[in-house]
Image 1 (cartoon, helix red, strand yellow):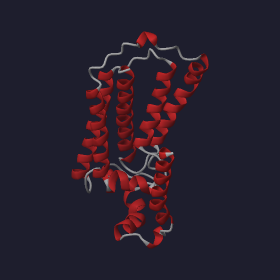
Image 2 (cartoon, one colour):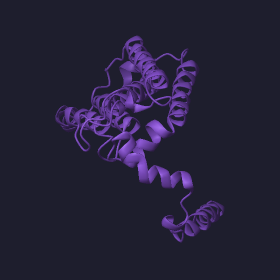
Image 3 (cartoon, helix red, strand yellow):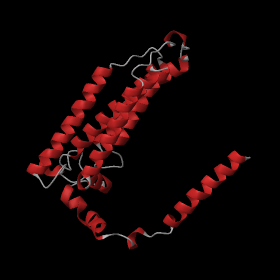
Image 4 (tube, one colour):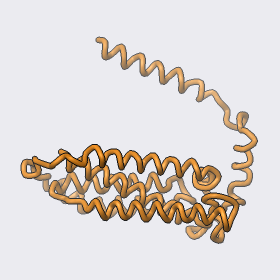
Length: 227
């Protein structure tokens, strides 16, 4: 009974928070800064996805902070689980034939879809974080279908480090060659709406996708090895 009351109270609490937001007309509440983003974002940065323009360039330092938080979380998981030993590796049951067959078919498609998401983030909804999560979900499916799958944590750390390093380098280049940190105009903006457009944004998102994907795979590997 108490559990149901708590659940009901939580639902009511979220309803009180969300319902007022549904009544807000965004066209009547835009700040001057938001108005500038909407009016000038496409012309200034060449990205068809306005959210990308804001997240990757106008508020690039916020994105850097998000990447740093994910890195700290990954390092924390690795630190907490570093002494755990996998003593039940031989006791794990084998995966089903259906799961193994489905995985061999689906995983390449999942990986391709993840790459598509972060390479087309400047054109369609998506980006580095979303693409990296999709790729990590493909690795999770591999783990479920093959319980003996081993991870090279050194390689994962190297991939994560290099992608993060080049991400920072591109951000710094924006300070010297363009208008600020992570300014995508260090390269030509190209033709609006094409895959090779929006300057450095596709590269930035690709690096983010690789970094996020490798970090999440590292977390999954540490969690599985600690069982």
